[in-house]
Length: 129
Image (cartoon, rainbow, N blue to C red; front, top):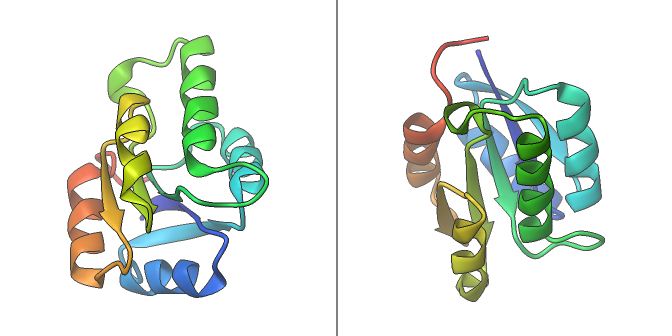
């Protein structure tokens, strides 16, 4: 089963994402950007995809993405092995910056489960772990 990092400061939004992926992925929740970075670093490249909210306290989603990409660069991770990231936002003006730092795509809130599953299937890394 694929492993997905679900990052959003709203418990309701995390629950909706997890419900949409039920039976498709094992989800790990992060409540903000700092929590996301800690879980990413502890997982040692074990995630197949991340759904990442942009507007969060302590560290926003774009900063999380920059941190992940800097770590991958430091570790000399080949581009094909970098963590696929789908941004989730109610503020689409930040999306171009996230795409510049390597997000694969984005979803605008409210997120529709069918579209979320489509992005999961399109962007998650191959092979079950």
